[in-house]
Image 1 (cartoon, helix red, strand yellow):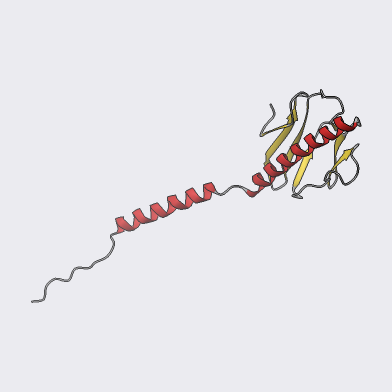
Image 2 (tube, helix red, strand yellow; image 1 turned 120 degrees about the vertical axis):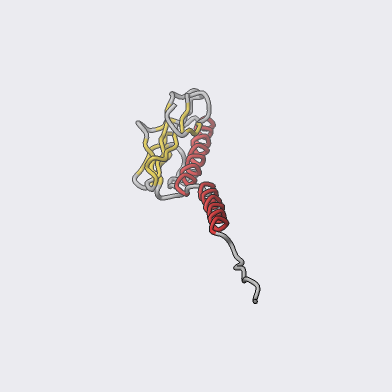
Length: 144
């Protein structure tokens, strides 16, 4: 008589445990990958905030009023020599909304004002760049 042959391999339960571990790992990696639209929006908000502060400093130093307005393909700083500050978004999907032109000086105290940035590929994502008139422009996710 030959000894009984025993099949070797994984049980169904062991295979299911491995699949669950792989699925959890995939979910973890997917959640860790940042949204490109959110990243682009954040970069543009930081960039615009720095441009506002630069224009504000130039206005105070020169004594010339500087205002910022949106244009069809970007934005414009009036009161600053052409070419000194950029006038286009780094990402063409960014749009800005403002109630009125942003005044950046030359007075040291400004009126409270804000600009809201949106990304055309992610309409729910937005960043608000605002000042209370005394402090520098700050970035936030939602209205204060």
